[in-house]
Length: 229
Image (cartoon, rainbow, N blue to C red):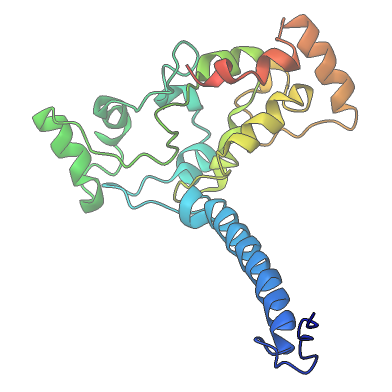
């Protein structure tokens, strides 16, 4: 009986030995590049390019909050009349502007869009600065009534010659506040005070305000249905 032929031990390898290294390197490089791409996308989504944070907007009239609020001391509610009673703060009617500017600076050229709007009863097309997604529900009145100040979300508007979005308005930013409510609560008579700063024992004071004002617990405030309706 014939013995089966022995396999040639010196048979040439189909793949070069370096193939093992190349395959491992390719695998790890692919994982690294995928992770890098994901990090880049997430970083870009949180960048001012997408969030519009700290980006000023060109308006039909370059209204200065610094001049009106910071220098002249005009209360937020004089222009944003519905902030205490409605989901939206409201854009002032032209007649609100003209209550002052029919006398003050009534001939300067850059206020002509205001005067034309008053004459024609056509609304000025202001560019919205703080824009939330359509699937997000936000109510100004509930925040104001519970003691969340304007500057908490909008920043120091009394120092803004041109209005810009001071915070990211990302969901994580909202959740950080809803999970630490006591840190945002202030005395009700300080809601419109741009210069208000939390005290050293803000957490303790905030917990007291939270109890007195019947603010919901963290679980309810961070529930999806609270903001997405």
